[in-house]
Image (cartoon, rainbow, N blue to C red; front, side, top):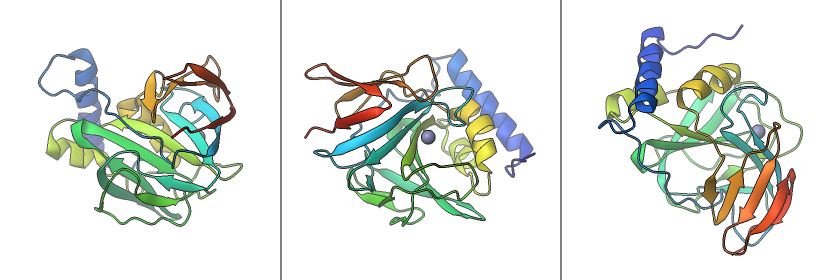
Length: 223
Ligand SMILES: [Zn+2]
């Protein structure tokens, strides 16, 4: 089976730290409220979403949603710092935002950003694709968008946030358990995403007019 290449003690400490956040929400080591994010692609176009699911598509926190925008261009939904996660098969992109929030972008091809680069909302990250840098599967060009929180303390965050060489099988299970945050209830670009009972389901509700799209399905990301 896959084995985490992170130091065992570091990961264990990070998991304990994450559990501590859940157990003591008023403690000082607290992640900021969910920030205002755009969708991870340009508004004004049709997008297909395969719906909300857990990172591994079967169990655990549903911290993932798949998007296939018509222009195939993935963009940062909020300013932050890029961390390219390297594997033998290539790289995938995470962005660390203020307040301990991290967003992830898997399956991208033609990655346009570099490790440590500061990006603004709207910066092109790459194209939707079927890349499997650390393993996994893909059945059609998309971006597998994920939500995470990392420990509040910078040192712990740096240790916990280095996922170089971590197989997707471990990212989507152990790391998702430790740091994954549900998509359910989150607003991206004026759309509220609600998880369904099943994997790869849910709704996208345009907040200002309550227009509801069932997922999987297509909606137009309004300007
Ligand atoms: Zn996915």
